[in-house]
Amino acid sequence: MLNINSSKEHRSAMPRLASWLLSRLANPAYRNELIGDMEEEYTERQQTNQDTTTWLLRQTASAIWDGQNAMVKSTVFVKALSIILCVLTLPTIALFVGWLSNVDEPSEQLSQLLSAGEVHFILFNTEYWRLVWNENSISHLELGMFIHTPSILWAMVFAGSTYWFLKKSNPSVWLFSAFALAYMLLPYLFGYTVISSLEPVDQKVGPILAFMMLAPFFTLPLYVYFLFKRFSK
Image (cartoon, rainbow, N blue to C red):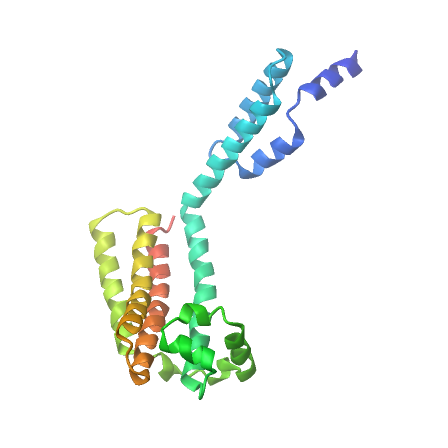
């Protein structure tokens, strides 16, 4: 009798894979209750010979989607993204500034990209990264390379606007991040538009490129500061 009962219990138990996925990917706010309810309904469906496979797939997928959607909207997730963004972006900009400040005669391809303001293509260019690595751009970095008045003023405008924005409204973490992202992208888009439409001489391209890269360089840490200060919980 014990073997028969245990066999029935085994047949009525929800598959381990579904339980494992739900225990890790479902919304933690009601994860345990959800798994308990699903196990109970799964057992009832088996006992009444109702479809269990399609139902389980649909319910598991829905629960995982809801859980991941809640995670993406969480403050912790946005904070983690902001840290990753800093770790990837700030050194990349610093290396580019160091390379641009010390380069003598870039190749024809890189020179054309610089003249067109297409830094986004340069950063995905294997030749550029080979030069940065071989020339050891980190050792050539100097504080004076990062003193750029328009970029510093832009960061100050961002700080003032952010203070006012957070004081006058109660934005969600994603709305605030979108607000900050706009401030970080505008200098680049502005510079790229000016270079591509007006085609300034090479002597004037350099300051525009500096603004395109250094304005986000100064703005990004301020965004992270306000993010952690405002959304501390």
